[in-house]
Image (cartoon, rainbow, N blue to C red; front, side, top):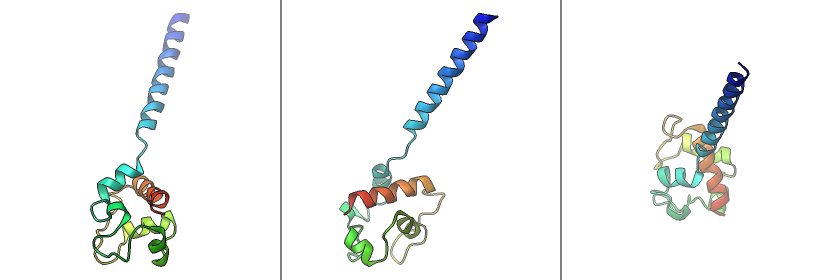
Length: 107
């Protein structure tokens, strides 16, 4: 009986450890998500449709896009020429990762 309890405890701990590691590997890469959804129209932070609306800080701020929330807002409700990325296409977590990648990368 005592061996069974120890065995079950070890099994539970191993399963919990595996689940935690799986969660870590599931973390979304903003860079990879950007490459998948954004890079075609925004190579190197540029803009092939409207060169005045690049992802570089100077242009973002001139267009009142200063925060991650602002970037996500543009993804969800873009202006003319940009594809809309709804939550089904780009999850909130993925959109946040993309926004943070843009803020960190295109200064």
